[in-house]
Structure formats: structure tokens, C-alpha cells
Image (cartoon, rainbow, N blue to C red; front, top):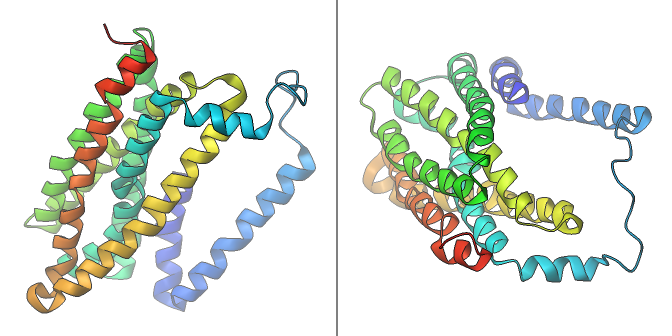
Length: 269
């Protein structure tokens, strides 16, 4: 969330004074510097005895994940909710500029901190809540994630329909908080349902699908729909295009908390 904060505040300032291309150029070097530092320091010590070559070959790992019904349901639900947690969040800056008349500098100095602080509070609070629910079992974690996902629909509808910039920013803070509140519990749940030798691969699959749906597919579809509706709705076309996609979070909550997935795991009576 420190990165999110700096991206909006510093990135907004650079964009205002030097253009958006300069902001992208400035975003690269810190990542390269940290990569070199991590490779040089070697901060990650061995955690367990490595498996032998015959215990967990790569093809067996993917096969085991494909047969893991709870994991399949959770990952499907997770990829759908990235419509908000990744895709929509990345486009809200443009929305505030187009629908509420904010400029790039205002978005960086006001919208960015509101979102970053809300997301940071959600992650920390979600971790605390997740520890509490974990005592009751993985099924409780999953149900919390599902209901949290359902709550995103009315919050973001209120944001997109807010009559004033101030109300929209307030809804943005609540939305940022709730959109990350589920993350610690979800991470714990999908790791818990996976065998130890599949957990790293499971994390890779989860991140890959999130990037495809939230990072690539969502902006493409929302922008295409916004362009299609622009002659009819003008600058509000982006607002309605974003609203149309909110149905995905309802599907996500239903899929992630699927009774079938829990039954196949033997967690429901």
C-alpha cells in the first residue's frame, strides 16, 4: 500500500509537470534496485527440507491442483472479484477526472491517499478478523470471504452514483477498505486447502488469473463498453460501463462460497 500511495501522489505530480510517459519511466528503476538488493542479500533462508525429485514432480503438482475442487472454486471466485480489486480500482482515477472534474494533480493528492489508506486498513483489519475466524475452521474463512465480496456491490454502486465528489471519495475509502478486507482470509483459505507441495504453484496460478482478469481483461472490456456508450451517455459512459461489470462480484461471492466446493472438501454437514 506504500507503493499504491507513492504511485498516485508522486506519479500524479510527475504526470502534471512532466507528462505521463515520465511517470512510467520513473516507476521502473525502484523495482530493479530492489531486485538486485534482494538477490545480493539473500534474505530468504531455507524453510523446510526440499522434496526429492520423485515426490512432487511439476506435472503431478498441476494435476493435484486440477483435482482440488475447493481450490478450483476459490480461484474462480477470486479471479472474478479482481474486476473491482484490481481492474476497477486502477480506472477510478480516470472516472473521478471525467465525472467529477478533478485534475491529475487532485487525483494524485486526494484520491490516491484515500484509496491507499483505505486498502491498508482493510489488509490489517482483515488479517485480524481472519485470525479470529480461522479458529472456527477454513469453511468459516471462506464464508467470510464470500459475504465480504457481496458487500462490494452496494458500496461501489453508491460510489459510482454519488452526486458529489466528497460523497464519492467517502464511498471510495469504504470500498477500498472492504475490497482488501477479504484478502488475508482468502490467502489463508486457499493455501489451507492445498497440499504443501502444491502451495507455491497454487499462489502462481492465483496471481496469474488475477492479472489476466483484473489487470488485462477488465480494463479492455470496460473501455470498449464506455466507447460504445459514449455517443449516448457522453462523459458518463465510463460510469455506466463500470456499473455493468459490478455483477461479476455477485457471481464471485456465489462461486467462492459455493456449497458444492465445501461439500466436496467434507466441510459441510
